Figure 1 (cartoon, rainbow, N blue to C red):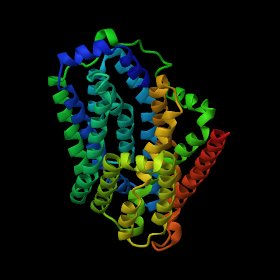
Figure 2: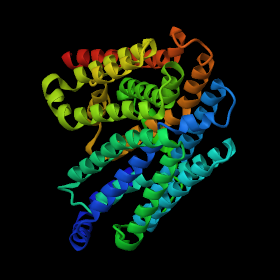
Figure 3: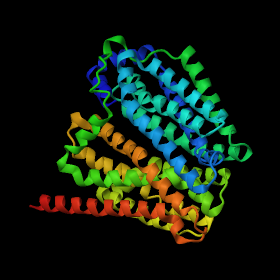
Figure 4: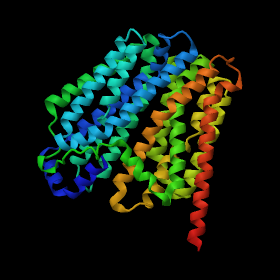
Length: 424
């Protein structure tokens, strides 16, 4: 997608004219992004519980949910760059239509699933078609001028955040009525969005701006290889990767952990995840700029990583459900560590390589959704037979704590070295 964005910058006059001819298309993208994130958020509190209906024990529930998450993450990692490249060749609209139809089929397959194998079919379909976020960003770039493009991306990010805030809470409430209900609603939203896009939304990418499809541009490993060659910021990249991997482990195991340890229902988890999304939105939308001006990106990144490390340890040690809420709201600085690290990495990168950097960081984060779910689920499965008050029940969070703790050490060493080099 970074190549697509760079291509748009080089063809700004064409873009500007297309924007003038088709105003208001950004609203469609904002609706798409909101509905997509709402649909994803709807199923988060219920899918791990639904897996438990098809297996006999808790450890199998944790294991197979981890495998499902890995399969989805792997296919998303492999297919998203290819679908983005196809959108550069054939236009955004057909790829968006494909993605919406695929996600609708994914949710319906899951809702109708009579066994574990059918859940895998749904996850495979979803992973192969979940390109809407990447293509939506490209669409937003197409219909924006260079002057207001950053503002458009900000609106896309806000729509994502709003969808994730509302989705888990609504999914948790509906899941308390029926575990299948959130999937039917998510499928209906995707279908409605598909029909709206098909009948009312035109193509955003002019024929003259399209690029040839190539396997090199669709290769998901190319972005990771670019990062591997950045010896100048390797320490920060390692710290960022460890933080993202810890986060992926947390997302995979949270619902089952709170179910096993505190007996939380989908509704309980929906409320907790609503609080997570709300606190993240407050920090990113209202406090991030002030924090960076006040303490700087370097200190903010270290403080955020430290806050997250402590929170992981406390999550693992919590003995009552209400403690999880207290930790969520006390851990607001952790939300700022990722943007702070991205800002530092951006400043260390040439202006004409910014798109490639951000795309590579996204690939690195996506890799965590491939590698970490099975590890986290396996550890949680091992701990699932322990008494609820046994401290080892929190083993997955202790692993997250260790990973992020190593990330702090690596980042601190990097900053210390570069401060000393600057003094010389």
